[in-house]
Image (cartoon, rainbow, N blue to C red; front, side, top):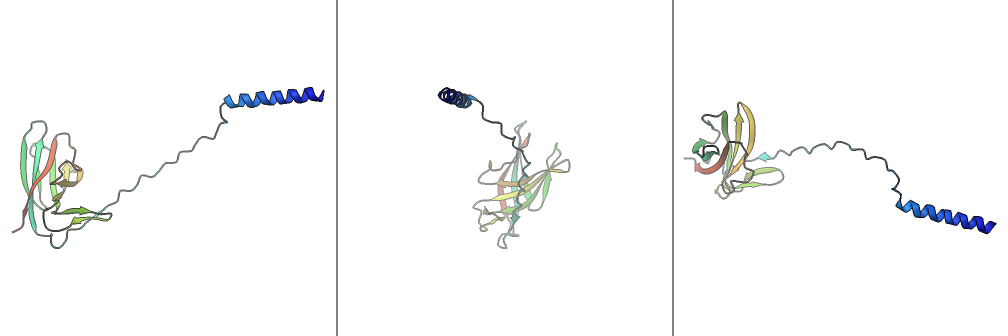
Length: 161
């Protein structure tokens, strides 16, 4: 009788083990999602070197109307601004760096030679800032401001004096 009970026990154990392979895995507790704080954008310092400061008078910015195809060129003093006619846009030229370079902490100019010209602009619409960034003379599509109607391009720059 002991043999019969042992055989039935082994058979039952084999069936349970075989069945458990097809059974879904045991439920695991649901993962608790915790909000991840968005990384704080690092604000890089803009450093205009002494050998660049005051050495550049103005920049030329082309504004192309994508609806009409018309293009206007604006000559703007460093620190100056202009209004786009028939729009609510105001463009202000903040800084010009003739040899733009950037590292982990700052944006500056490697020299006063125009090897990688860049102009930092601010665009406002109805008095509200909609863009603060750079236009690059050699790479006009790099970080280009996307506006539904207008494209902005750095065309040229004029030394002071």
